[in-house]
Image 1 (cartoon, rainbow, N blue to C red):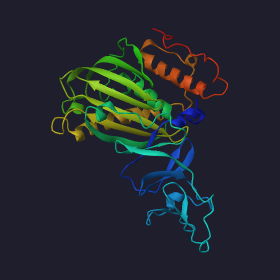
Image 2 (cartoon, one colour):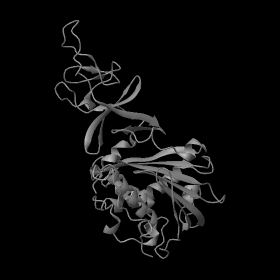
Image 3 (cartoon, rainbow, N blue to C red):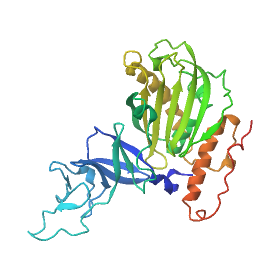
Image 4 (cartoon, one colour):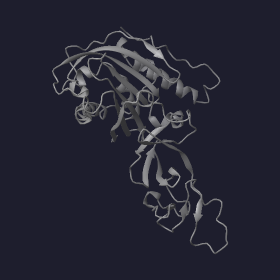
Length: 346
């Protein structure tokens, strides 16, 4: 399945910019163009082109506190309505059609989030470590990848690729097997908790020595169809940390990969620069592989070969399959034929 084919995905929230980015800014979502700008009332996401003569509005100015079209000087407010048309005679009312389509937008975690459909939730998924535990939150990466958003999220949930993809950082090809684990359903997605024995990850806990091995638990959770939470727990032997990731769909073959980290330690015990430099190496290993993958992502369980270690990526396909069928008129009033996640090979 291509990302633009699953219409229900438009009803979720995606990060489209950092809060301190300059606007107006052209934003692409699901193969369509929009413009983000900062009004006095806050961020506003509007249609990309002026309704008068089609000028693209990321070239507009904001000097007056309004969005000013560079072509004929029409001015638009936060709600998209035109407030000034210089060519009109005095006392002539502004035509009702002189307005921009607007879309849902909000700020959270240092990011601007948008929903271009009917929001399935009141806002972006809540981040436990940031909201309730008060861990230090940083935006690690916010960049365009030549990969399907599905592939990026699937990779975040995949348990068996690190041994080979990350063999230059923390992976070990001599230990490719994954302990058995169960998939726990959540109101929105699912969660897994897996014991791991890893080396090379010292810099993420403020330890420069990459030869030290650690026992840890990895908690992987799907928070929304294109949003994951990964928490690494060290049982007190080192500071824990978590990753929040979202793949914002630009089109079928490109996505904005956003990842934020939440660190349990303070800056002295867990320096962010050391953490980030190491994490960058790991992410570059993922990027190299993901940009070679097929953007047509299979959501039918029978179309691929699965192993027991693939339980959570199988569950991801089941969730997307169900979402696809729920948004398809042919299936809305019927029972979808989705195979259970236990249908995997040992």
